[in-house]
Image (cartoon, rainbow, N blue to C red; front, side, top):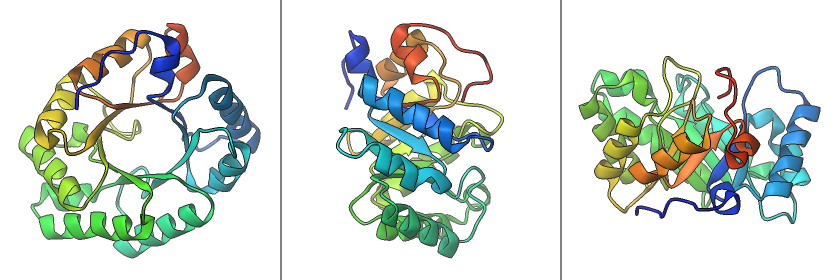
Length: 230
């Protein structure tokens, strides 16, 4: 499922989830993000659940999707909580769901629990796009491959590298490993620490089909952004 490297800002923009997940984000900040997304035609705006309704209304008719995170950023809530959060996000207008797996369960080999967790969100999301965040920086390579397999078994649409809130973000090596693990069956979203157009293009060359970044405008303009950006 390798994509051609985007040759124009417009092509790159359609692969970007324009992301605003900082806890201090205000409604005004979110609306500015939505305005940027409308102007540049990003793929989606990705926000915390509290902002989903605002985003869905602001993007209505724009062709830009509304994406909500679930179980974010730790993944350490119950299946029932993640499912309920997903139901609420869908009711508020979410087109896409980015869920964090139960990382501890994966690391200790409780794979049935990880799979059930993914399936519960899949059921709650219904036909919406589901991306499974594996938080690759906390896993060894075998665990990353296992997480990708479980995401596929759970009928996710994408596997995603990172939340951007842990000890590391997306790497080219992880994107390549995840692409090899899922083949053409799933998309791969690279997210966390992608701050230049060159980094985004390298992730796409490695197999990413979606980019998560808080500074999408800077990416398509070819500008670097501060290290604090997610």
